[in-house]
Length: 217
Ligand code: CDP
Ligand code: CDP
Image 1 (tube, rainbow, N blue to C red):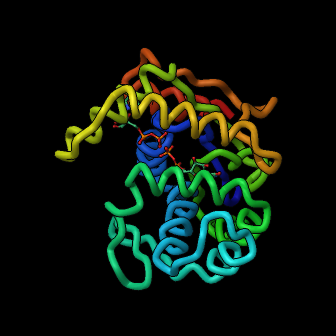
Image 2 (cartoon, helix red, strand yellow; image 1 turned 135 degrees about the vertical axis):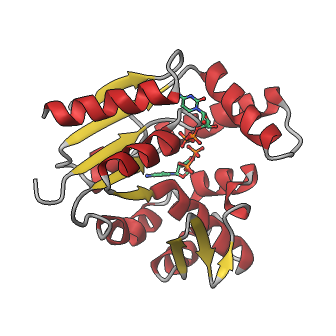
């Protein structure tokens, strides 16, 4: 266990990012938000005038993505795009390009490079199945669709954005369906992943459960 990896996969707004970042902080590990890479690639394509359907061109851009994560911010070409990549349409774009095999291949090694001492917590959809199949601990984090939509709604309202709960619920269902149905790296619970349903859990409870599982190993 020189560079242990904890993977946290699951559907949209299940709490993966929040829980993964806190677990990483608690253990002093690195943190990879793989969804942010897909969001950055989707935003980059949009800004370069490349259609999200154009697999070759999107993969070309993903392979040379001028992105970085520093100071809790996401950067694209030297610009702070932390807020821009969180927009719902960019989430949808990320989900579209994430279904293209050569785009996933273009981002694979970049994600693996995050496995560094003293360890890594990685969240996404295929962290345990494809990117880090030999991870020390794999968690499949989920929550009911209603709870997830309510969380996303609260997040948007807290940011001062307008939000429509029914529309969010629909968007989340559409994205889950596309992520689960695609032929490459579909969203699903791996046989060796622990299931953690956070519908009725606080963030602290979810974080403590992951830490307990990791320490038990
Ligand atoms: O990364 P993912 O899309 O799975 O979810 P997130 O952005 O980490 O979490 C969505 C929202 O749910 C955040 O505002 C969290 O604070 C909240 N959350 C919660 O209320 N209870 C939990 N047990 C986990 C997350
Ligand atoms: O925040 P949320 O959970 O809604 O999404 P995200 O983790 O930021 O990921 C955005 C989109 O990227 C997802 O809907 C997936 O289609 C895609 N994605 C993926 O395919 N594989 C990953 N490892 C991470 C994200």
